[in-house]
Amino acid sequence: VSEQRLNELRGEQVVYAIHRQDRTFLPAREHCPLCPTRPGAEETEIPFPAFEIAVFENRFPAFEVPHGVAEVVVYTDRHDDSFGTLAAERAEALMWVWRERYEELGARADVEYVLIFENRGVEVGVTLHHPHGQIYGYPFLPPVPKLELAADERLGGCAPCALLARELKDGRRIVYENESVVAYVPYAARWPYEAHVVMREHRASLLDCEADELRLLAEGLQALVRGYDALFERPFPYVMVVHQAPTGGASAPARPPSGPPGSSSALPGSPATTQSLAPGAGSGHLHVEFYPPLRTAEKLKYLAGSEQGAGVFIGDTLPEQSAVALSEAIARGG
Amino acid sequence: MAFYGPLRIERHVKDDGRALILYTREQAPRDVSAPREESREELREEKARQT
Image (tube, rainbow over the protein chains, first blue to last red):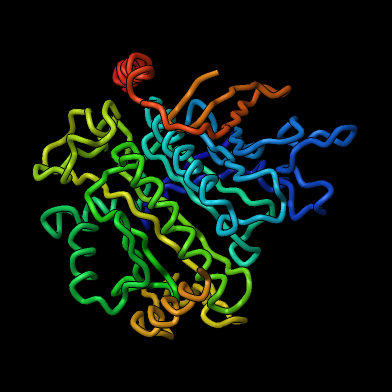
């Protein structure tokens, strides 16, 4: 059972899940718990000989009912694939899986915020190589979405909408565009090759997206990840996080007064679009942030004294320089 | 078995009681809102009661 404590100095919750100390750690591929169960072989987490996408409750959860949830999302039954190498149809299906989990978990009374993420590479602490992501349903609103809502207030509207407009106007840090998403290295990126994939239209969550937008989101995410892999011609480690509207009762945001263009055509009936919410609250804006730890092909960016002690990132590369390199890599990655 | 957009969903319970959900892509996307609206409303009401 996890224990939650408030770190008073930081004003942050800390979760202790001491049972996770014993979780499976970089097993040999023949003992991969995320592979399908082969006939006559040891049973894995997925007791079927084949599957497309599987979701299950984490055996070593950071959060457990009735205080949240932790799930594992397995992208494929092929051990050596990655998000970037999935067939386009599978990547698109994954967007629908994310959407379905966001909807179901977000409707739970013990879940205030649904975080969908992927850790890729041992550099960011991956313990299983089989392509997969995770979903945490937090029983409280975590600091980062709180900061995003505060940014909405500071900027007087949807912050990601405003920042996207600035990036499009400037243009130097854009690395990828399609009809529904724009990817860019942010003006004040904290990581050398940080990138954000942002919905062009205001969409509070996956629930507000039309089917074509989900397809194009998958397309944009895969283009970026393939570009990352092409950047240094090696599998590129990253943390990928889907940012969406909070789902909790009191903390859940309202759709902004302006409303998203074309909102009448968004898929109807979602909790995020129908809750009655606090006046002045932000809305969230669906975007996916990547935090890659590499600053060169072989050197990592560490969170050291300034980053951890003062909360100030010191960059070695200007975002404009990173964007040029990443754009070229995306073109090479295909 | 249930459907969600282009997905067919099979829900299982593992031997230790944990949930396992398998998703399979179908050819044509379905309307996700209509068949799920009632259950979603129930969940929202339940969540409101608990909070």
